[in-house]
Image (cartoon, rainbow, N blue to C red; front, side):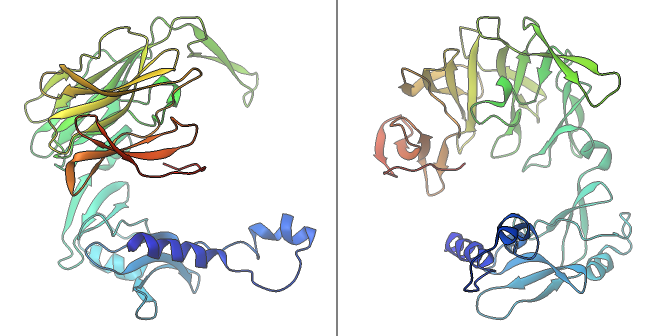
Length: 367
């Protein structure tokens, strides 16, 4: 139901120009980004545990959070003055501008105050620090549900928490040995390098060795004189980088490496945890990119368990989205694939057997 509401809101936002007249060239090319631009409901979201929605709106020149629920008229929900009143007496001081706030993650309001990511209890005005400013400024920062925070500093992976302290997970990170970052040139839906388990205590992460990859020159023409910066780029026919996946146990401070096997020049993509965190699923793609295996691995030992299914194509296979387990049935998951030439959803059992194709027809799905 909430998804339907969001669709209706998005549709309503686009209906800002309903006059019965033809658009001039000026209207179409210039005013479409100003007076005729579709209204945008900034940071639209539902309030956790309620059917109310909120979004950020300009009122008298100020950013104000507005709340509604389709039963009553929209009303102001939170002003900057009200937020600062709740922060009064804390170490975070007075905010100069309204921050982006997550109202839909928990009963707390989650936002960044003076560089620190915090959780504010709106009922008691108690504040909990999630990520300190010194950590938030690092690379690849990602928090877990168990209050652990992973980040990269000086090319190495660290995990920190109030209960267990700060742990350095890797020590040989460099320009050539890349940890916890996006790998495989951001292909196959890869956009990060760390993946927390559901319980927030296990961290799957990438290790990419690109020592063997030749340098490729990139010229920075914005500087005078122009500067050359070499990057590692695996050219066709040349050596490619080699990627591994490790699992760090933040409680016992140990790492297990997933045994993905040979060849070393393969793509490890679409990493996903099982609902009970006992298994890790990886879409393993050959370098030719025409044969994919969805593999299951033991998260404790790193051992290969089984291949759930394979996909092959004469030209290429392009897995883009990790498997998504059903919330009401942990023994089934949804897989997104363009195996028939179009991008569709498929329902599978945990043993790899296909239940049914969920979507049909000609069309493209977005992640």
